[in-house]
Image (cartoon, rainbow, N blue to C red):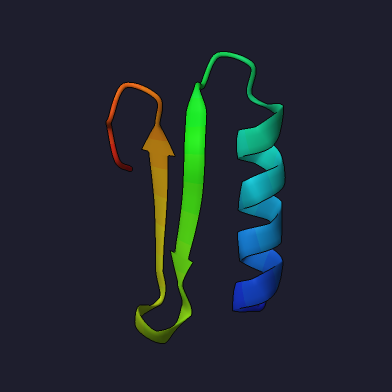
Length: 44
């Protein structure tokens, strides 16, 4: 699985999760980082 496909699938899964209050998803391609920010300020 390529990186872009993984990011797309992760985004779909997180968007479909009703119990997660996602504020934003930030992707740092240069560093291969994906940060998921929740509405309570938590970063995954």
